[in-house]
Image (cartoon, rainbow, N blue to C red):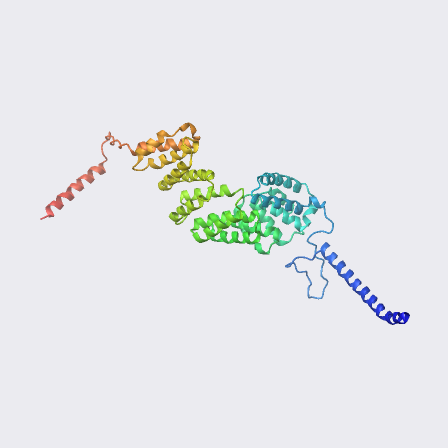
Length: 427
């Protein structure tokens, strides 16, 4: 009975084995096709082969990166840039060691790229890595061997020329080239940093356009040093343009996303010094916002910020702001300390050109000049001279040794004639 059942099942077993063999062959073919695609990818969209739809032969399109690497993978520029980006993001998170390591990496990567064989640049990933390196502040010399490589696509070629102009300090040329790039259509490695550089270049002449570029940079590279840098520049532009609502929004976002950034302190100093110069629209509202923001800063750092405001306001002639900031710095400083002496200096200097110049003189004379830097001593000397000039009556003009010109005598005769005529005409 068992043998009979086995014989009846044989056709089903045979059919199952044939189906399994066919499926295995299909999977093997698909895997081989996928492997071929990875090793020799087709050209990106926009690179249409000649003869398409015309019935003729389609010429071979060169791959975006070669099947055989010119150097070991650890020496490939795109691998070096991956390490650099990781260090940069650590800088945005507040790592001091990463900041120091970044400088060393930039030097080392520049040296390594300069020694690579030119065949390395036939790999589009390495071309993009070199562009990123230069836009990050690297030596632009590394781009020169790449410019004339025949396999470099048009979009990377334009980005190359723009990055070279930027690295060499040719801002007008850089903006002309990079302004034509659509960052959203670039490879993810380049999209964010290109938008950031576009905003930096545009900020000198077109604030609205620069703000739009910085928006793109933040959206294309979230959580990176690129976003952190875009936020810093964008906040300053919004302040100058008087856009209080977006300023408040992005300031809160910066504090939330990058509270420990190594650039945060210098950024705050730059912003508050700008407020002191009154470069911004709706200045009175910025002063109140300045006080609100400063209350979020630790007291130790707050003293330095108040002094920076007082110094810039004093030099700019903004008396009320200088007195306010200097008074705050004095309240937070320890009596007799260097910061206390500087606060008193700016208080006295602010009063020197006002009706309270006498009080300003007393304060300036009481400042311990031995605790001041040379630049602060120059401010003190200038303020003392101003206060002295304000409180001194001008000397009467010296008598003229030479006779008055003839025109003056004729004018006096005419005036006397006019006066006589007026007297005769009066009833």
